[in-house]
Length: 183
Picture (cartoon, rainbow, N blue to C red):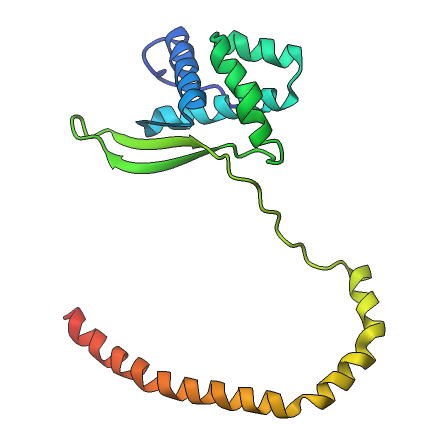
């Protein structure tokens, strides 16, 4: 749950801030990406992510809770029917904020907040100790293969040594030129 804000609210009073954030969330779910000020984007992120979490649950009570915030049935349907299935594998982090510079008129810092709808790519975890013990039994086969391929390894080592020797003079020349350009 986001921490309650202290100090001035967006747009004046707390009721106006709640309506402003609800309208920003509705626009975000409709258009998938909106441009707003950095402050509004940072305040919108926890609300939008909580609503997406409700949509992932997908039951009637969750739908009614989202309707209490947004109020537009078409936007809620879009959230539950289209967006929630696309982020079903994702465990949080449904929005991305990208800073885009300052606004021309009043120099306010602007940002783009968008839904992250790309599929999640799972990272490979390090092998567990039990998994590391299983390949130990296969080591004699690896030793036999290594005995057959030393000639190929020597040829590859010579090629990499030649490539490194060719790159080294080019790097030295670049290092000499850089201090002259810095002055």
